[in-house]
Length: 252
Image (cartoon, rainbow, N blue to C red):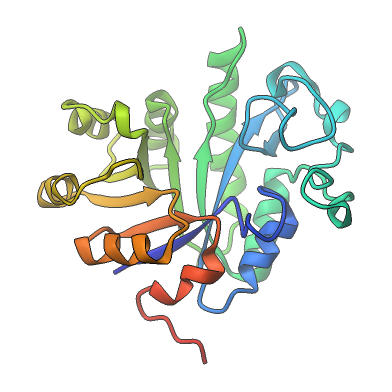
């Protein structure tokens, strides 16, 4: 099996982590999965954004965990990409559930590590809220939880063990204790950065019995190579260009 994940939605064609990007991905024939990032505000509202700060992908600056939701709910999350997306807002996690139910999409939910002085309480709040809100997701949709933060994944194992968990690794941080980290949070899935990823490393992970997904892969040739090496999936900004590599893909 080989799976193509739309990284932050169809983020090459619409602003990342917006409903526009998610809907664009949902309209790609044969695409079943989107990846998205969940962060939390000071007053414990779940919003969809990759960075700890608003600066890169909105028209406002500031740290998410230091701002209440009312202060950011009307910022533009799309004008930076193209003026036609100026009305795109930061989606809430409730928006994502409604989207997934409407389009029958599967969700890879990346749990963002919490910055600031109230990190422990906010981390627990993120996981508890996601566990509760996922009860409204259509039972036909699959969920994969992922994070660089082992504490968040351990909490997820405790509060929603029914969902698979993947540990995220930057290439340079993939050290000899990687299996200990996965075992700690009950994970059997490695999501690793595609930076000088070798066939030997792929083989060692797969031969140890783990599922392996690679981020972020935007080249058809590289995605095809990884598929031939036995990788289970790739995260891409260009899901529309790679979707034909999906197992069981049928354009008709």
